[in-house]
Image (tube, rainbow, N blue to C red):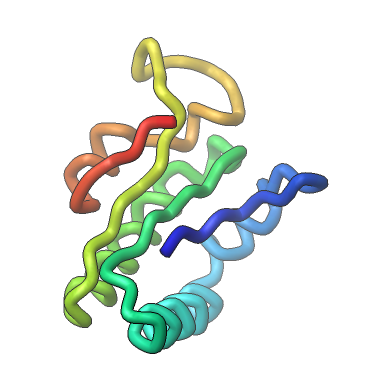
Length: 113
Protein backbone atom coordinates (compact mmCIF):
# COMPACT_ATOMS: atom_id res chain seq x y z
CA UNK A 1 0.00 0.00 0.00
CA UNK A 2 1.27 3.48 -0.76
CA UNK A 3 0.33 6.77 0.87
CA UNK A 4 1.05 10.20 -0.56
CA UNK A 5 0.48 13.78 0.47
CA UNK A 6 0.01 15.27 -3.00
CA UNK A 7 -2.63 15.34 -5.72
CA UNK A 8 -2.70 16.54 -9.32
CA UNK A 9 -3.77 19.99 -8.09
CA UNK A 10 -1.96 20.31 -4.73
CA UNK A 11 1.74 19.73 -4.03
CA UNK A 12 0.79 18.56 -0.52
CA UNK A 13 3.29 20.55 1.55
CA UNK A 14 0.66 21.77 4.01
CA UNK A 15 -0.98 18.34 4.32
CA UNK A 16 2.42 16.77 5.00
CA UNK A 17 3.09 19.37 7.70
CA UNK A 18 -0.29 18.73 9.36
CA UNK A 19 0.43 15.00 9.49
CA UNK A 20 4.08 15.31 10.54
CA UNK A 21 3.33 17.87 13.27
CA UNK A 22 0.23 16.12 14.64
CA UNK A 23 0.77 13.03 16.80
CA UNK A 24 -2.98 12.47 17.24
CA UNK A 25 -3.51 12.68 13.48
CA UNK A 26 -0.61 10.25 12.99
CA UNK A 27 -2.18 7.77 15.41
CA UNK A 28 -5.52 7.89 13.54
CA UNK A 29 -3.79 7.64 10.17
CA UNK A 30 -1.63 4.67 11.20
CA UNK A 31 -4.59 2.86 12.77
CA UNK A 32 -6.60 3.32 9.56
CA UNK A 33 -3.63 2.16 7.47
CA UNK A 34 -3.18 -0.97 9.58
CA UNK A 35 -6.89 -1.78 9.42
CA UNK A 36 -6.96 -1.30 5.63
CA UNK A 37 -3.82 -3.37 5.13
CA UNK A 38 -5.20 -6.22 7.24
CA UNK A 39 -8.57 -6.22 5.47
CA UNK A 40 -6.99 -6.19 2.00
CA UNK A 41 -4.16 -8.61 2.74
CA UNK A 42 -1.40 -6.10 2.03
CA UNK A 43 2.12 -6.84 3.25
CA UNK A 44 3.64 -3.40 3.62
CA UNK A 45 3.43 0.36 3.35
CA UNK A 46 5.31 2.74 1.07
CA UNK A 47 5.41 6.35 2.32
CA UNK A 48 5.71 8.72 -0.65
CA UNK A 49 5.61 12.21 0.83
CA UNK A 50 6.86 14.84 -1.59
CA UNK A 51 7.30 18.61 -1.40
CA UNK A 52 7.75 18.41 2.38
CA UNK A 53 8.86 21.70 3.92
CA UNK A 54 12.60 21.64 4.73
CA UNK A 55 11.79 22.67 8.32
CA UNK A 56 9.82 19.40 8.66
CA UNK A 57 12.84 17.18 7.89
CA UNK A 58 13.22 15.79 11.43
CA UNK A 59 9.44 15.55 11.89
CA UNK A 60 9.40 13.35 8.78
CA UNK A 61 12.08 11.11 10.29
CA UNK A 62 10.11 10.91 13.55
CA UNK A 63 6.93 10.00 11.66
CA UNK A 64 8.74 7.20 9.85
CA UNK A 65 10.08 5.87 13.18
CA UNK A 66 6.57 5.90 14.59
CA UNK A 67 5.11 4.25 11.48
CA UNK A 68 7.80 1.55 11.49
CA UNK A 69 7.19 0.78 15.17
CA UNK A 70 3.42 0.46 14.68
CA UNK A 71 3.59 -1.48 11.42
CA UNK A 72 6.41 -3.84 12.41
CA UNK A 73 4.53 -4.86 15.56
CA UNK A 74 1.68 -5.82 13.22
CA UNK A 75 3.92 -7.78 10.85
CA UNK A 76 4.16 -5.24 8.00
CA UNK A 77 7.22 -3.78 6.27
CA UNK A 78 7.70 -0.05 5.60
CA UNK A 79 9.46 1.62 2.69
CA UNK A 80 10.03 5.24 1.74
CA UNK A 81 9.99 6.77 -1.75
CA UNK A 82 12.60 9.45 -2.40
CA UNK A 83 13.63 11.58 -5.35
CA UNK A 84 17.17 10.69 -6.47
CA UNK A 85 19.72 13.22 -5.26
CA UNK A 86 23.13 14.09 -6.64
CA UNK A 87 24.32 15.09 -3.15
CA UNK A 88 23.04 15.22 0.43
CA UNK A 89 23.08 19.03 0.19
CA UNK A 90 20.90 19.23 -2.93
CA UNK A 91 18.46 22.14 -2.63
CA UNK A 92 14.81 22.26 -3.57
CA UNK A 93 11.46 21.43 -2.02
CA UNK A 94 11.57 17.94 -3.49
CA UNK A 95 14.89 17.11 -1.77
CA UNK A 96 15.66 19.08 1.39
CA UNK A 97 13.28 17.27 3.77
CA UNK A 98 14.34 13.84 2.50
CA UNK A 99 17.08 12.64 4.83
CA UNK A 100 18.24 9.66 2.76
CA UNK A 101 20.69 8.42 5.38
CA UNK A 102 18.06 8.50 8.15
CA UNK A 103 15.35 6.95 5.96
CA UNK A 104 17.77 4.16 5.04
CA UNK A 105 18.29 3.39 8.72
CA UNK A 106 14.62 3.69 9.70
CA UNK A 107 12.66 1.84 7.00
CA UNK A 108 13.08 -1.62 5.51
CA UNK A 109 14.04 -0.31 2.07
CA UNK A 110 14.00 2.81 -0.12
CA UNK A 111 12.42 3.52 -3.52
CA UNK A 112 14.15 6.10 -5.70
CA UNK A 113 11.89 7.49 -8.40
